[in-house]
Length: 520
Image (tube, rainbow, N blue to C red; front, side):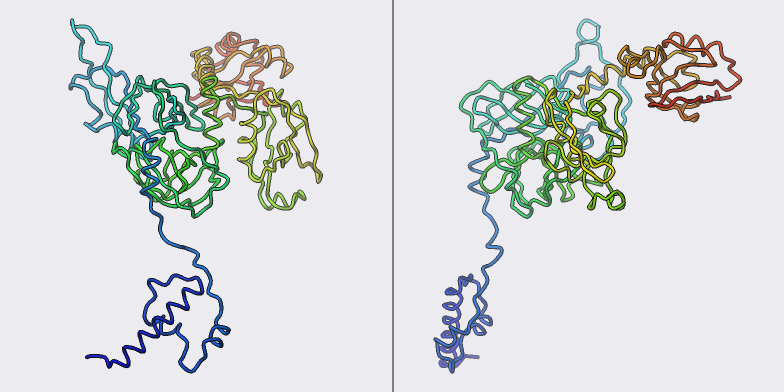
């Protein structure tokens, strides 16, 4: 039906008036529906000045629109690299290849994102030339991402991307490939630095994580499943998400998949604010929860890796737990905060400083400990040998204690020591009770104020059922003092195998007899 000319003119006038009013109020006008335009227009009977005075000021929109990432990709994209790794593997009788014919991207999927890697029986090795076994051949072992840290070729990525790699290949966006040298990697923070022989590279700009806000748009660039320079975007879901001892992760809903590991997380200013590292998944696939290493933490680690090739961390020698609301109220702490000390290692910096079990460490060098994970992070970032201050809450009052930070023993050294200890006294008699023991060091004897004994390295079976634990010190067996592992085995071999064996065991400051009943 054709609208009368007068009615059409009236609606047009109302629409124009509404647009003018909305523009004056600072609102968005281009998508204003006609019904809203009519409602917003003043009635003909109302004078313009009166209508203007009576109108309430319109609030500015909280969301102005969706971002355009094209300029950001053009600017930062050349700084993102693809990383491939290879490792030497023995040639297989079936002509090589991965388990069940899966490619390495899929194996990376199994390893890193929630699914167990299938247990494939080993295939017979194929003899090398001349009938002897070959030295092996290079096989792809993983794919990941990284970004250029400096123009002279330093590249940052995840430690798990280059772990166990015999060769690391870095590919730039201009398709140039370089063999990279692993400068250093740190498993605890999952940060690694590699170096390529190139100059004048487009380095990224490092952002300020403290300015990052929950709800802020962020973007990731990486190589999911080997698809180079793939761009995904989302928002920051949470900050300071605790999933590890040393890292307060950034949680996002940016799509991250195998191959994105090591790539940058970017804000809309084109600055790197994190390294994409992990996802939460029940299926092994992306489920909308991704975690990135904050770039300030990563840079702190990378500086040490570039200068010394390793990361040193501080320790004070305490076992800690959370402070519940009930405990905080009962001891007069008020709100739950700090780290509750459950045990103090003998001879440790904390013991020497006077920290006691039951103390609540509420500050470290003047920084508040809001939650238990704050303490190992702050102490870990302190250079060993430096003097600091811990503030403890004890029996209703606070007390400052001076403490000298010690160095955390490297994981490799711990693993090597345990391996040596395990092989030192895994004798037949001890094994029959489920025990592996090792000699006490001179320092341990002095610490415990004992002349001899053995330390339990591992415990199982009969010994575990008797209540023995790793770290216990056995002073005597079957009423015979033991000086070392050799004496322990000698005393145990003379004991009646059909009767329970009594052992005098030292645990902390206490000693007691334990009866170990051999399995029948």
